[in-house]
Amino acid sequence: MSTRPSTTSHDRKTDRKRSSRRSTTVSTIADVAREARCSPMTVSRVINGGGNVRDTTRDQVMEAVRKLNYKPNRAARSLAGGGQIRIALVFDNPSASYLAEFLMGALEEATRRDVHLEVQSCDNSPDHADLVKKMTEGGINGFILPPPLCDDQRVLDLIREEGGTAIAVGRGKATGAQGTVLIDEFQAAYDMTRHIIGLGHERIGFIIGNPDQVASARRLEGFRSAMDDAGLEVHDELVTQGYFTYRSGMLAAEKLLNAAVKPTAIFASNDDMAAASVAVAHRLHLDVPNDVTVCGFDDTDLASSIWPELTTIRQPIREMTAKAVSMIAERARHKRPAAEEETVIFPYTLVRRNSDTSPRGERKKSA
Image 1: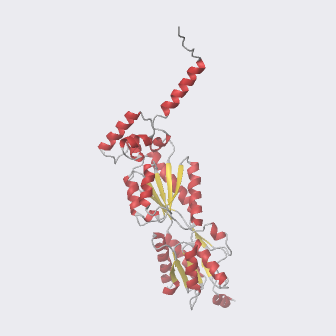
Image 2 (image 1 turned 30 degrees about the vertical axis):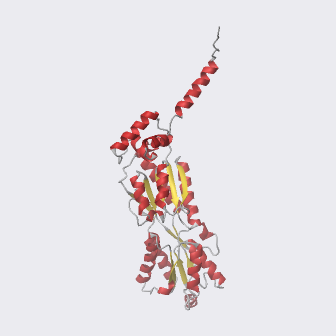
């Protein structure tokens, strides 16, 4: 006669726990996406009642949901307003000091809002759109795009097509972002140029930023406009190209400071290039600011970590990036329509430190 093993209450509890674990791990949003042959973002839109999905695709997703007995998890519920949101900060910016500020602002706000932040460099991905497509397929809810990503129309078009949210930090050439966070680049550069002119400088050198970025053009326009309003000539030999990198700033400063008639002041389009200009001046045995005034833009940590500390435009990079994170989070949780666009303009500040003064001739007159 055979006997059946006895079942204790402990065994029954263990079986129930095992069964519960199996039932909660039967399927994921990725499983549904594979079964329906679409992206996880599309699955999220369907299960949360979003638009811009073809009827045939919607039917395939719902059939996959039924077949796999899929229950939306925390990540999938984020678009419905209840769970953690996934945001990607995608960058391709050569300025380490700018990126440090940018990343800290995003990380601090993401932590405060319980947002999952994925940081992705485009350095090894020549096709930005291809990289973004892979990330949307991985279930990213929104993208923060600093320059030059916010200038890439293919990237903005792809994010919109996939139903994601794109927030540009800085004014870009591309259109289609649901939000833009920026300062008035033109007016900031205008004010800095007027400040330098107010010190008595007339022969002013200007180092342009990356020519592919709107910010560079706006800062150059502000410089030219201030010079024109003051009745001063913009000498072609004193406007030289940089690329927002320290190295490009060195090359540009060498050109300016080795000219037959040197500028009495240099206004560089970012702090990296301004710091490089200070280094070149020192190498040529020129005192900053007594022999040449040097001013920058951004007010990154670099501006106050060199000597002399830079006079610069403070762009509130951390606050701007934090705002971009909050804009995506609010849109996702409150299901705001993709067509609704928002622009937030932050104030800037002209921060005067030790790298500027009146030219020697003006100091002699005042004495």
